[in-house]
Each structure stands twice: as C-alpha cells, then as structure tokens.
Length: 300
Image 1 (tube, one colour):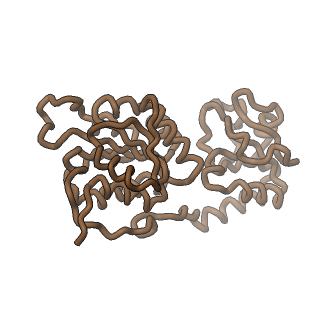
Image 2: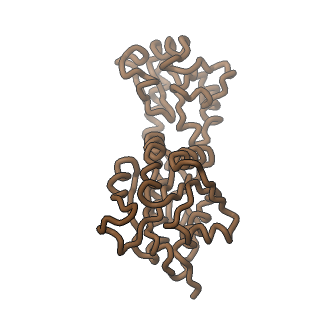
Image 3: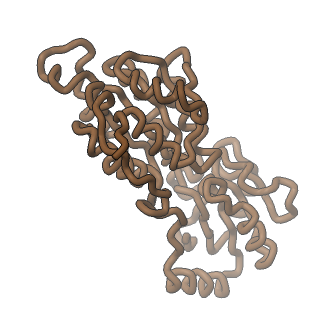
C-alpha cells in the first residue's frame, strides 16, 4: 500500500474540501506540508507579512466562497499572532481552519523553543481545538475539524500537528468527498415552524422583513426578495448589511440601527410582526431597547 507523509495527507484532505489557497508565514515546523505544496501547484501558499493578516484573509475567503478558509503557521508566536483574526471569525461564524505546525512531541513539557499551550489559548475562540499526535489519525481528526467548522452554526477550528507527526508516514487513506463525512446542505426548518410563521403573517397588519448577513452567506438573497415581492412585505436590512437585498427595490426601506435610515426605523416601530432572516439582532441593529422594536411586536 502506498504511504504518505502526514504533510501530504493534510494537503490532500484540504484539496478534497475545495481548498485552493492557504495563508500564513513559512516556518520550519511544517516543511512536509510545504514540500507537498511545492510539488502540487493546485493549492497556493500565500506568504503574508504578519500572521494576523493570514487569519483575516482566510476569514474573508471563507465568507465569499462557502469553503473553509485555511491558515497555516508555525508554533509559538506564529500561532499567537493569529488570535485577533480568529476571534473575528468566531464572532462572524466564519469557517476558518487554523493549522499549526507544532514542536516535536518529545519536546513537549521541556520549556522548548516556541513551546506554548495553544490549545487552551484558542479554545475560547474556536468551535474545536485539538492536537493530532499520530500520523494515522490525521484523516480522522482533520475531517472532524472540517466537519465542525462547516456544519451547523459555522465557525473557526484549531488543529495543531507536531512537526514529527507531519514528517511521519501513514497508509494512504481513502479519499472521501465532503458529503461522506459532513452535512453539505443546510438543515431545513421544521414544517411546524414554517406553518406558524405563515399563520402569524396572515394575522399581521403591518409585517416587516429584517434581512441580515446570514442571507448572503446562505446565497438566499433572491429568495428573500421573491418572498418580499410575493407577499408585499417591506424590507429593511440589519446594520452593515445593506448589500443583502437590492437597494433599488421598491420594497426596500433602508438599513436599521446605527447611522441607519429614518424610514427603516419608522417602519420597525410601526410593525406588529418582524420576520428576521439571517440576523442575530445585535446591538448596532436594535440598540437592545425599544427605540426600534416595541415590546409588543412579534419577532420570528
């Protein structure tokens, strides 16, 4: 049976997810990954000036491509420099995969060069933080990380692979399509929940659609506009999400919240039903008080 290095297994697993760009700064702890990338030019490693930029670039790519955004950095400060960008991805529910080439396994707990407890550091800002300590487990655990990042409410994950594990060999794994180990289609709402919204809409006199960035992330912009036009529902957008619907549409009243449109605020205050789609109704949208949303307004 053919054998792969751990580094090659990482690259092949990322390719199966459609990854074509990896961001970071070259480090000696993941040379086996870089060697594979040098021979296989289908994935480009983009060397940045600072690791923080790598995290933000991976985040941005993930948001616009519906694929995992990947950054790959070295141990110690290479990883700690990612923190602000990963925290931003965590807040935005962006599927960023943080890969770190760690120090060798037999150097742990010896005050080694660039040794740091990265798992504990990244756990609060990721959905999953783990270390892979056997080459044979790279396919299993990296797929688990990808599944976690891309399934349900998405978000960043952290995977540390020691340099000797990346250098070690493993039997060539069966290459699986993403649909074989994670959900590749969003979960549909429960039919009872849909019926409840329809009933509320039929009873409402002044319904309003509040459209957020989740609509863009799901590629549902056209569907929301169709719903608005079919039911004659006025639309407003959440803070910073003006691009969620065509601004020239006759039913669009403008953005709600900080520096928003007075027309949107007035419509929200008048509404007896607000259907929020793809919005978390955060502070800059709602101000967390009743200046826009009245206590008696139904919100779904």
